[in-house]
Length: 55
Image (tube, rainbow, N blue to C red; front, side, top):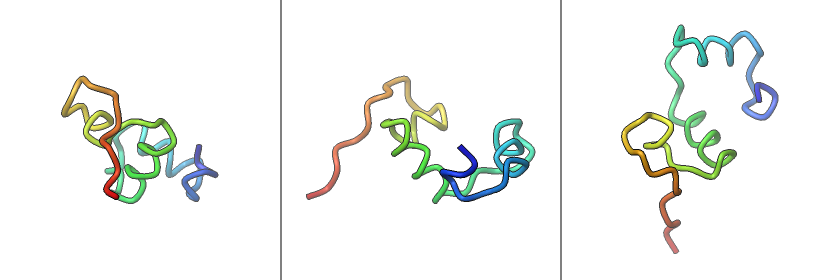
């Protein structure tokens, strides 16, 4: 996952354990990878479905 996000393993580990806040661009990449919404990743919703894309 660290390679996909273009960061070090230590950096990604710090995101996972809460030592570092996850930047918005990384949240967007994670939501795209997992096909979900950023709100779901941030536990702001229980609905894992991604929002529809703008046309």
